[in-house]
Amino acid sequence: MGKTLFDKVWDAHVVDTVKDGPQILYIDKHLIHEVTSPQAFNELKERKIPIARPDKTVATADHNTPTVNQHLPIKDELSRHQLEQLTQNCKENDITLYGLGHRYNGIVHVMAPELGITQPGMTMVCGDSHTSTHGAFGTIAFGIGTSQVAQVFASQCLLLEKPKSLRVNVNGKLKKGVLPKDVILYIIAQLGTNSGTGYFCEYGGNVFEEMSMEGRMTVCNMSIEMGARGGMIAPDETTFEYVKGREFAPKGEEFDKKVAYWKTLKTDTNAVFDKEYSFNAEDIEPMLTYGTNPGMGIKISENIPQFDDASFEKSLQYMNFKKGTSLINTPVNYVFIGSCTNSRIEDFRVAADYIKGKQKAANVNAWLVPGSQQVAKQIKREGLQEVFEAAGFQLRQPGCSACLAMNDDKIPEGEYCVSTSNRNFEGRQGQGARTILASPLMAAATAVEGKITDFTKQLN
Image (tube, rainbow, N blue to C red):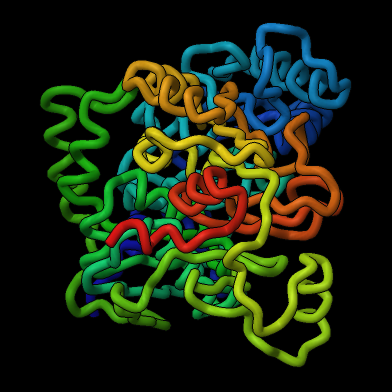
């Protein structure tokens, strides 16, 4: 029997196998930030265990960072303390840190790919659930807890049970206005938030093959939202071209040798998955969530379903929506384009293309937050900043921002926010905030209209 892409990468990293038990998996890259690393550093310090491979660890500041006046001292005491701890821990352990203000600083799942740190065939972990983003490169990448962060610090390995394999295929031609974010929101809405539990998901079909790397990262980023351990897309010429020439990518002959190996990282034709689903691209429309988990999503043309279920009712009550109604014309006062899901240059190009020549609605607070310092510079270089500012949008400095209420960028209680982030849980963007997940195009259209609108009618 043939091997899946996941099998090939996993098997190449198995150091040892416990009889009738888990396997010891070698980790190529360990990404860390200020939120989940302090306890792990403290544990090693208390036990007098050194960091095994500091050269395999890369740190950045992202979750707690302000997105306004980053040159000034951080006002929030907890945020300031966590960032100071990260700086001190990295200094003591000789770990590369791209702290606040560094030209390579940014959201961990944005800056690592753009620097060429993320490469096909790797195993990568981070104390952050959206580490699955890096699977877009044909990488086994997944989030880990604090105790596992300590385990990687101490050994550069993890003790793990091998997940089962899942493949989701999408073939056909996407409609105008349908972005990668819509594709993954559609998949999660169809399959549910626990459909991938216990599995590692590979995405197959021409829709993913034709996507840019940035689109693939958006899809893999949200694999965790259907319960999967992670998501992967086989590396191809699109991948190789993206990696080539980046700061920490292999160069010259070494790059050519790597590409020869990377080309072997695709699922064999006779490989069998434990579970497989297939969808038609033509069935997908721009998506919106109406509830409090990413699986509660509908097409722009659909109405909220009419289920009789206590948790469903509770979710609608929180969101102040009613069964059987459309979301079109729902007034919205906050729009957020950013997060590790949609804060790359491609996302801002899409938004700027729609916004150009238009004005933001007077009632809307529209926050645009680049995923890294490099994205911020590119926005300026390409003239997008002028487009945004002319339309009344606020371009902020890089960071996780309003994806989660861990910094100053919070959505007020009771307010709706059309957000390009990845989670719409109760209180995710601020206590009592109501999150509607969508693509950058849907978010831009909402900001211009001041309400949810079916922008597809303007595209025909």
